[in-house]
Length: 407
Image 1 (cartoon, rainbow, N blue to C red):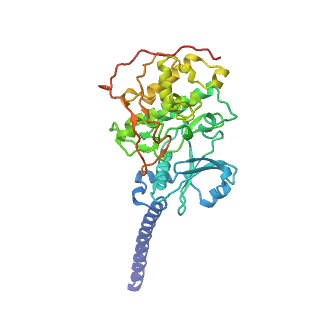
Image 2 (spheres, helix red, strand yellow):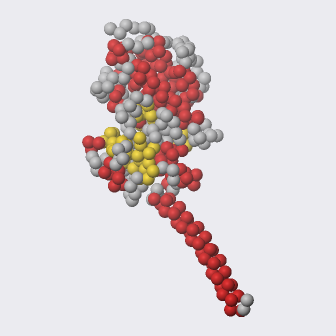
Image 3 (cartoon, one colour):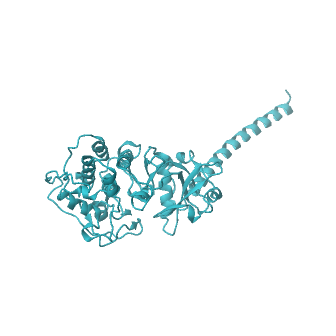
C-alpha cells in the first residue's frame, strides 16, 4: 500500500469517527432540548416544574391539541357545561372517533393556582388507578391553555341527584353502594396506593357517577402527597367550608383524618338529600352535622332520612348503623376518628356493634358558609371546638335511635 492510499484510508477513518461522535453528541443534545421543552410545556413557573419521577408518566398519556378539545365541546358551549369547580368549568364533549369525554378547563389567573392544580391533578391521576377514582384520558397544555380530559360519567356528579329536584331517584341500596364505593376509593388513596394521598376536597360535587351509579372520586387539584413518616403536615387551608375538619381549619394540621371528617359530612348529605348547610331552614336545622347530633342524643336520627327513602322502604337498623359511622367520622379529634379501612370494615360488616361517638366539632355557620377556599385566598372561620382533657375521652352509651314509624 502506497503512502497516498494509507493517507486516504486514515482520512476516511477519522471522518467516520468524527461523524459518529457528532451523531452521538447531537442525539444527546436533542434529548436534552426535548426534556427542557417538555418541562416548559407543562409549566411556565419554576415552582411547578414536573418532578423527574413524574415525567415518565406523562409520556404514557394522550396529549390533546386545543382545537380538538374546542371542537369536541362545541367551542366550550355553555350548554355543554357539566359543572364549575374552584379552578374552572367542566364541559362534556365528543371526539371525532365518537368517544364521549369530560373536559376541565383550568383558569390560570395571576396567582398561578390553575397551573399548580393542573400539574397536581395530572401527576396524581397518572400515578394511581382504582375503580372508584375517575380515569384520566389525557391533557392539553398548549400555549396558555390548561385542560384535563376525563372519562365521561353519564350520571354527572352526586350533588345533581341529591340536592336538586332530580327526576332520578336513588333508592337506599344505590345510596349505600355509593357511600361504600367512596369509602373504598379513599381507603386506596390513604392506605393502598403507591402514594399516600390526602384529597382535601371531598364533597358531593367531586363524586361522579357512571351509568351504573358507581361512584368515582374526582378533582385532585388540591390533593397533597403525604410523607410516610409524618402524622400530619402543616398546610395552608384549602377546600370547602362545611366539610372541613376542625384541626385543619383552625390550626392547618392536615392528615388523612381531614378527608375522613369530610366523608362523614357527605354520608349525612347522601342519606338526608340535603346540603350540609341550609340557611332557609329553622336555626336548629341549618347545619346538618349539628342537627344530626341533636337527633342522635334524642334517639330519633331516623327523622333525618329523606322522606322518599322512607316511602320506598329501608332497613332501619342498617340506616342507623350508617348514621353512627358518619358521626364517628365527625369526631372532634383526629385520633378519635376511624381510618378508612376501619370505615370500610364497619360499613361492610353485618355486625352492628361499633364504638359510640362523642360530640362532634361544628363549624360556625355565621361566617363563610360553603365558601370555596384556595391556598392564596382564605379566611379561617371560627368554630366551636370542645377541649376535653385528652383524646381518650369517655364515650357515652350507644344511642342507635328508636324505630319510629314512617307515617
